[in-house]
Structure formats: structure tokens, C-alpha cells
Image (tube, rainbow, N blue to C red; front, top):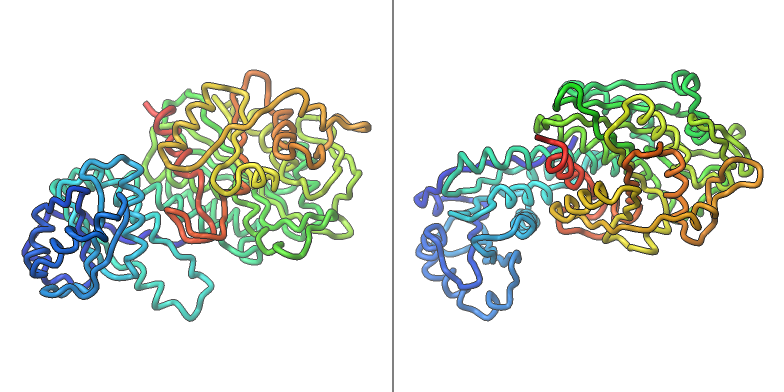
Length: 493
């Protein structure tokens, strides 16, 4: 997998600044006050830094922005980066500032003179998160990929404390990278079998991982999930990951992810234009995998189970047809109106299995489920649907702290009525109106009475066409930080 860059904390040594050959970054607040590291840079550069800080250009900069002085006189560094930032930033401000530094890093060794900056660990996480590039299939860029891993050294007043504080945050960054790699991977590489193998490999981190094959799913009665993958040569699977770091008898939180490794739409075939993006239709499963990796890496003191349904939705002579009726593990029958509304068929069985087997304290599912949520919320927020106000509030608080956009959407009987079937217990789509809501209502049918539940529709945020604060265009890893924060805040002692 793509590895985050090496980030090391060290005590500030003013005498090493002049000889650093990569990039040197200084942090200056809005008042333009220079700390000892910045003062040494200013003396070495014969007043260049002070002149810049006193300029109109610096005055117009916003907190978190970086300006570059190329080839600063009196220094070996090829560039001096000036980060404007309060010495007491918020968590989000520090993280975004780190991402801004990573964006200008350019694959060079980087020395960040952080001094006594508060939240230097969040600055480090921002550098790690933004220092991502998916180059696995770029044969011409192998040397460049190696350069991108050039170390970042953060010189600060308390390096031991910073190293300890940053460790769990950098573990989460690694989980985000794992998710991004999975979502970016092409479907001919990330088959259901390969996906399951990559998850199985996480047993090395202390996770308990088991793979349920088609024969197992048939015995369990997962007719809804199996109906989606029956047109593909790739076998359908369910992977169960357990992290048991909490009290022995404490009920786990269950995370459930949609893992459609490629979605043609099945017999209800999608238009050709843009179909290549459907390699990301396993984004929900990718997030669940990234969260489980993060929890294992940082040795979270909580019990969490992650379950993902892995299928491929293809048209063939054996594919499910519009109008077919399938039976779920719960026992409900489902009229398949549109084979392109397949993700909910996968989740229905995995949700029921998760509750049946683990009796969790709560369930959160994630899926790139509907285009309708993109129409409603764009690419800034995931849609949040819930039957439990307390769990929902806890998640929204965690998402805000992680700076991952999320917006609660409604549920209600009127929407449920839209998916009543004439010939079965339920149909898998209610048409275009309120499409993301009726999809959530469908999933709620497979949540047991009294079970706290959240459905996250991440179709608009899992993979995007432009850079974000923390990621280049492509897979974002949205949700790993928010769910990790939820576990940390609400499920760990």
C-alpha cells in the first residue's frame, strides 16, 4: 500500500538550519512576530524574511496559507516556505496548515521550524494526509514516487511529547491511505478475491479476519446479496473483521460497508460515459477497512466489528433481471425494480447478519449508494440518516472535529410507502423522487427494533474530481477520521 511519508520530531537546533538542502518552513502569526527559528532564518537570509513579513503580500495571506521564497540567500535550502498561522491554532487549523505545507513539499526533504506551536501533532497529521499520490500503475514515475517519500522533520520545543501525541494520528493517516488505495485501484486488480485477500492480511495487525464464501452465504440465506453478484465470474464474499480491544463482554460497534468492486448497473445498464468511475463503488467497504486498520494500528481500547459485502454487478445470461423477486436473510422478499439499485441489496443481508451474529451496541453502514445524494449535497457533505438522535449527534460531532462534511437527512413513513411492492414485501427503488431517502428507508427495514443505526451515503465524497484540503483528486478516504474519532470519543474508556 501507499505509505505515508516519514515524519520525525526533533528539538530545535538553530545551527543546522543554514545547511539544510531541501525546503525550510517557518511559522509566523498574523502579528508578524518571529520566533527563535524564524529569527535565525531572517539573519541567515539577510533580512529577507522580515521584509516579506512586513509586505502587503503577507498582510493579505490568510491563516493556513503558505508563501514560498525561492533560493533564499545565505541558506543551502532551495526554498523557504512561510506559513501564516496563529501560535495557538485549532485542531482543524493546524491540520489544514500541515496539508498546505505538504502541498508545496514537492518530494523534497522538509524542515519545519515549529518552535512552541500548539497542536504540532495535528500539523503533522495534515502533512501526512496531503502527502499522498497513487502511483502503483505509473511505470514512468517510479523514481518520482520514491522521492515523494522524502522525510519531513518537525523541529519543536517538546519533541518527545509531540511524538507520543502524533502516533495515533499518524496511524489514522495510514488507515486513510489504505482506504484511498482501495478506492483508487482499478477493478481488474481489485477483484472480490483480491479485496478479501488484502483484508485477510490485516491479521498481522491483530485483527481477527474471516472470509465467508458463496457456499457460506447460501447457507445463511443471503439471497439478496447473492442476487447482485450472480451475473459476474467474480465470486461474492463477505469479510468479517474484529478488533476486540475493549472490555471482554462489551457489545461491539458494528461498521458495515458496501463493496461493489465494479458496478455496470447489471441488466439496467449504466450509460457508457463515466462508467469507468464505478471502480469506486466499493467506497463504503474501503472506509470500513481503513477504520479497522486505524483502530488496530493505534491499539484502540474498544470493541469494533467491520463487515463488508464484496460483489461485482455485471450483465450476463445469469444476471438478475428487473422484475425478479429475491429473498433476504431476514426473510423479507424484494422485488428488483432496477438492478442498478444494487448496493442496498448487498447491505440488507450484511446488516442483518451483523446484528444477528454480534448483537452490537449500534450499527453504522457506509455506501456510495445514490446519485441523488450528490444532487442534494454535492461533494461537500455525506448524507446522514439515523433512527437514533444520540448516536447521530455523536457522529456529527466527530465528523466536525475531523473536518469531514456530513449533513443529516430526514426519514419518515411517507418515504417508506414509496417502496411498497405489489408482488413482494418491498421493492428496491421508489423511483427518482427522494432517491437517497427511499434508499435509506429500504435499509432501515433490515435494522432490528431498538437498534441504534446510522446510514452514511458517501457517493459524493468518496472520490472527487478536484483536490481537497487533505487529498489530491481521486479517492479521499472520507469517513475514516470521523469514525475513528467517534470510536475514540464514545466507545473508549
